[in-house]
Length: 265
Length: 289
Image (cartoon, rainbow over all chains, first blue to last red; front, side, top):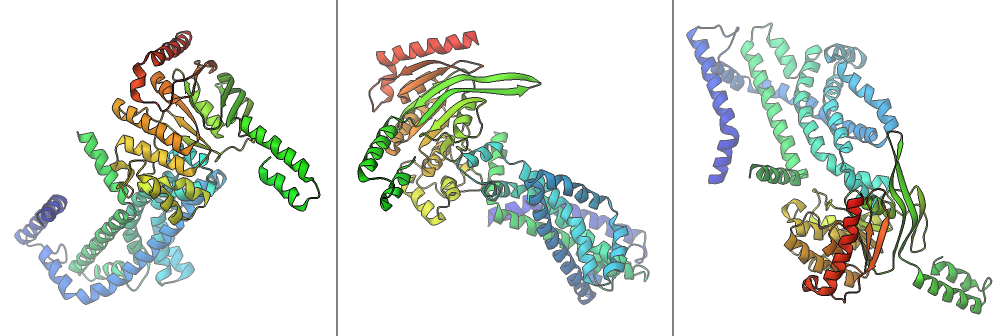
């Protein structure tokens, strides 16, 4: 219990202190200068709005969360497959990689309205925007991971008589997992942005839509409430990826800790 | 030709009479008894580097009989590892021939166990699962492979550590785990490339004696590359001395010390005499190289 408290203190206390400090300054500023709430609502007003609008917020949050999760899931699957193909064949790497990079240079804000025209108003265009943004960090990191496999280990596998496929499945793929998780964390964070952009361009539900609709109504406190919820989603999903990482590659953390310990001695 | 190919026509008794068959089997028996585990004949290896040809190995001859322990010593950079790579099938010679139990096929990969300088344990696999990777590659069912590995844990001093990740183990234990992986893959010849290089002296001499015990039990042919003359004499039936680039065999020395060997022998006169002779040869190589 004591160690739990201590680990909470070292892990979360610094962030908590900064957040509370910023909120206090914000609250004080709004109070002292009597700022109108349509211009800048105080943290307490935002908190009250969140409670009052809980039903509304949760309805829109649910939609956005579904968009994020489906889009991210598609990005993860297609990213892993694409990275494997790129790492397995030099020819396919040369054929595919330029398109992977080009896909990131297209301004998503331009593509999103087109998607709307092409496939309509529903869930699909948002999911595609999320997927387009999220698959890039996954592919790039995973390719790096697959390629940075220890060449001596490849030689070992070959002397054991391993086929190209066995080397990939038993050596390359597992050794690339730490890279995959690094990419996945970035992808998770940008997925949230992707969903909001998708909703801004055209939708009737979701937190992005709620923001767009609330702003011209001068419901600034509701815009902020949506931002708070979005941030919370981002942080929670990021932590979730970290948790999955610890479950899937537990050796990675203990090994890293050991190395850090050896370096500090 | 394997025994199976001789038996096959015998069953239908159209191709060979029993007498013929007997004769063939007798020939086969003598052939295999004189056939060395590894025979390297006139092997040279050149690499192209910046347009010039760099000779790494030159006309190397090398023999290891079935069940022998043979060491190769030489200065660093003499091409010892290149020779092992060629024997293992990771690399092909520029000229010359390699025969493994009579097989001269270029596709030798998988036939020769190769333990490199680093233990190369996979950090995401437990000690037990690292040990069975060779069996997995061969298609042995995981449960069966694990059972075989468990049976040997005690002998390898790894009992109680089978579920640990490699990074929690000491250097000596990691090396033994790597050797268990080699033994389980059950190839007829083991190539060991300075496997004890990273260990401290005490661990090293312990693991040498242990290795000799293991070698007696598994009855495999072992080829050890080292730059430690003591180690080579202590372990081997025969020691080859290699020159520096281009690598050539400059001395072959039989080690007639009685077996089983123990660490006290390293100070006995026969051992010291052998050591003096080998050291002179190695020094000559360093000086001329």
